[in-house]
Image 1 (cartoon, rainbow over the protein chains, first blue to last red):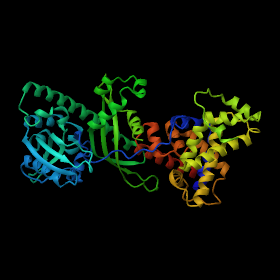
Image 2 (cartoon, chains in turn blue, purple):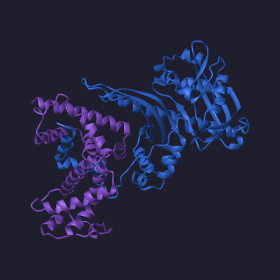
Image 3 (tube, chains in turn brown, red):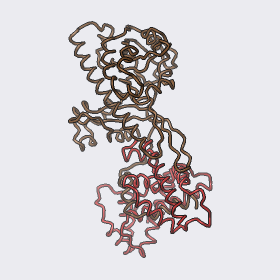
Image 4 (cartoon, rainbow over the protein chains, first blue to last red):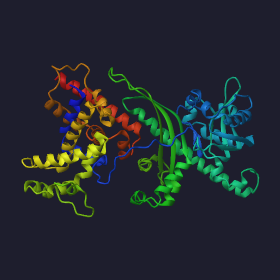
Length: 333
Length: 199
């Protein structure tokens, strides 16, 4: 028997199955064009990415050096200095023209808020973080900085950036960045960026919006990560190690632009308002290790980078993978 | 049958399959026009997937029409779509193999073939190998046993020779998930064929 025999033998599959597959796979669509998925716009640091949250194997990601690549951080006993060094060391990236830290401080309110979220979470369980550990060895640092990128080398958006950095303390007392949040420039007017203390009422409103958005981002990222991890149930998958799952605001906005007014959205009854409130794009990087089955060698591990589009069930608040992912892939073609 | 008869005429209502088959039986050139109008894109899609070359694919589609013209009658296909699809696939695979021998082959078909090679039981020998006819029947039984989505993904890849990315788009899956599904199905097929060989 050889592979040609197999592919020839497939010719005689029942017509009903061929038709069914043709319909499901779009082969019977007369407007169908040969599709080639363009390489998705990638890059570990896409500028307007918000709310990075490593879920599932997150600490492993740190240990594997993902954040070493992301942030060229210099371990220190002072968490603020770790963040400052990480930001300033962005200048060593080939695509960075200039970077300047404008404001930076440890934010205890954000520390408490984030610690409360992590407490008793799956992430905390995975990393063995007790409430006590989080109280003593976890901190949030706020940073405002201005960065300029070479746009011939990166898609990242530059200008004024506001971010929270989340750090954990190692046994030797040094702090390392474990996670970082959104680039808040998107939600904060440019004029106010360099003076965070002005116009308090506006600021409070903005913070509420940010908090709300961050919570949604977190929920969507967790849902995406859980779905990806769910693929471990496949017989041939040994493990899926998630490096990062990040909400991608730029891609969310691009999808909104493409979907609003489209027949695709109209057919599904998605209004612009619904999509604005209930759709998010996430960028996921993960490693799949396959299982050897009955003595058959496993296929080599595969590092995957994909964008997924999630929709939130407006009644339950649950985020799920949506068919918008396929729609957006088609737009890339 | 001039080339013009094969072009698609937008806005013209398509005939029912049995009406088209009747045109073949009446030896009317209109049969080709109607076939092209209704199934031209479908056939081009199959040929294009296999050959990855528009000119070759177009030739194979025209050969498909000729094949239909020569084989209907005596055949009277109940399902014209799959009849034409099978013809296109067979002709395109033949062309692909000819191209391969001329070192012009490759692409998705080579990849799909390489993937299918995994399904061949490693201890298979010429003597033990299933006859082509038995193999076809075994594969048909195997395909019938698959869950609907798994079957559709498997056939899109190995019948339509669609790329992983095409399938991912069509089924709204990630490409990793498609690869994983296909891998699992190939493993199942290998076990199934092994059991068939063991009798």
